[in-house]
Image (cartoon, rainbow, N blue to C red; front, side, top):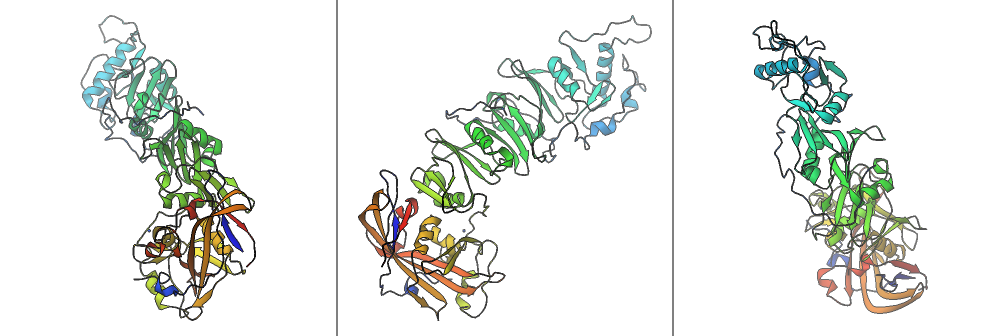
Amino acid sequence: MKLSIKKLGAALTVIATSVFLPVTSHAQTLDDQPTLAEQQVATDAFIPPYEPDHYRQVDTSDWDFNEPGMNKNNIDNHELERTLPADLGDPQPVITPGKMRSDRIPLPQGVTKEEADLAEVQEAREQGITAPGQPLMIRTFAADNCRTYWPSSFQVCGAIRAKYESMAITWAGQTPVSFLGLPKSNELTNPDGVGKRTEFQNGFIYWHPDTGAWSVTSHNSIVWARNGWELGRLGYPTSDEIGTGDGVGRKQYFQRGRIYGSLSGVVSIEGKILEKWVETGEERGPLGYPATDEEGTPDGIGRYNRFALGMIYWHPNHGAHPITGDKLFQWTYSGYEQGVWGYPTGDSTRQNDGWFRQEFEKGPIYGEWENWIFQPYNPLIGLGTDSNLRATYSVDAIKGNDYTNKIVLRTKDKCGTERIVRRGYWNGSSGFGWDKLVHKHGLFSKYSLLKMIQNSCENRYENDGIRPVYETSIHRAECSAPFMCQATGEWFVARTVFDLSPVVDSHDNFGLVTSYPITGSGSPLIEDQKYPEWFSTELPFVYSLGL
């Protein structure tokens, strides 16, 4: 049997032979024993990040960032609804002590009696109400159709006023009661010299001739601000905040993107990444909700968004592609786009063997699961596990935790014996399992490990038969087609050690302890015990030649 890793043209591939060579070194002399981590404008052009809140400072001291999905039907905690009666009575045209609304109605927090009395007089003038003995007045709305909403003395005008009133779920006199609360500013002109805005207690209403007037909640304003407001990547709002299809999250459309709110946070998504996410099924797809704004990669070229269940990366030469499951797990461990595989160049596709393959700049990554969620690397989580392993050979069950005991690979060797690989851990000096293979020995590909195990049988048992040891010869080759390969002269012998000790609360044994090259061509593999990069990045191809 030969284990082959092929190379087709410029694509990185590998061929290796799996034979059992007599190696005089014993496993314990090297490394098998652990010793004591809807609407968007897509563009492929690179858009540099904007400085957030670059033209004004908004007072957010009284914003409730923890309020979920403020909307017309969720204002239970808004003081305005609780404090203002539906019938305010006619406004007084002049300030008259003891007869003002403020003398009989508790004012909302932050509104002074002076401001409320001024607002009441303004409202009376707008309605043409005069004091006794004064000549009658005609209702005097300003030419731009502004109105005062007691007890705020600020006026709301034009299309913004119409939007504000349309959002009312009830009224206090002529004051609309909605999640926005009272106005906190008069109408202001935006830095582009075209759009208008008015600030309210719990958000804004923005207007532009191309988009109309739309509300922006406080929590969405935070995201919008850090993306440059209307001058930034998202542009002006084109909808209010609305519910998502799953009935859980909230979303708002902008000219060039969206803002989503969910348990993953309130974040923005835009451009080609948004386009790809929509293609995958949005929040109901394999990625779930977005969890971060779009961010730039360290090389200044790519862009990415994190999601609840994965990531989407964009590169001007390759487009946008989602990465999920254990392919993301392997890619993350390798160093993301700066690691051994580079940027993704295609989406994930299912193979005949049930595994999923995804192309990257330097070769494919293979995974078993598209929706597997893994915990971040933790080098300290396995403290005590390795000493427990050393002390309990065939004596007692080995302990661990949800991190270390997670099975990341299950397969059978060439002789039909089931072997498993757990997450394990590596803290820089001790560990076992996948974390150790990655962080100490530089093996990033589960598929390469899978094929090596599937084409090997154990050479011997050590530690009173509790530890099967495999020693496999791997040779690299370039292939012009399947079964048409030529050796490059690069090779190594890999030692892989398993442990059959039982594990607490598990029907499976401990599994893989370690795997590393013990000799080979090229760099001094014995000294650093690192797998060559090509073993991870090049496509395994297996065929049988017999022994």
